[in-house]
Image (cartoon, rainbow, N blue to C red; front, side, top):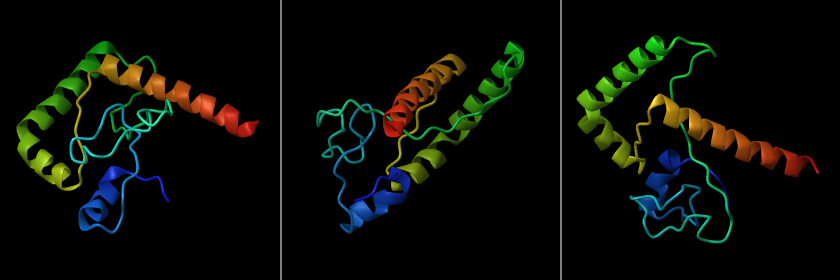
Length: 121
């Protein structure tokens, strides 16, 4: 048994060399809809791999907006290529705005803080 990222495991699921038991996503993954989430199995755990652009605290709002606009433009201009490549890995792309991404990171931070406290007991 192993916990890993969908991107590295997905080719093995397709080949039948690994079987997915559950995902840690909030909802079922589109590319493996038959696989339940751990929440559906009774464990209230949601965690996903996140990539984002981060800056130091106090970064001016106009800089954040410039970076956000540039990243969004890249995604929009190259969406078909990105989607094709990520689809092969079974990965879904979600583009979040600065406030949404910050809230998501905060939620993950709170969750893992609880996990670390439990492990230390």
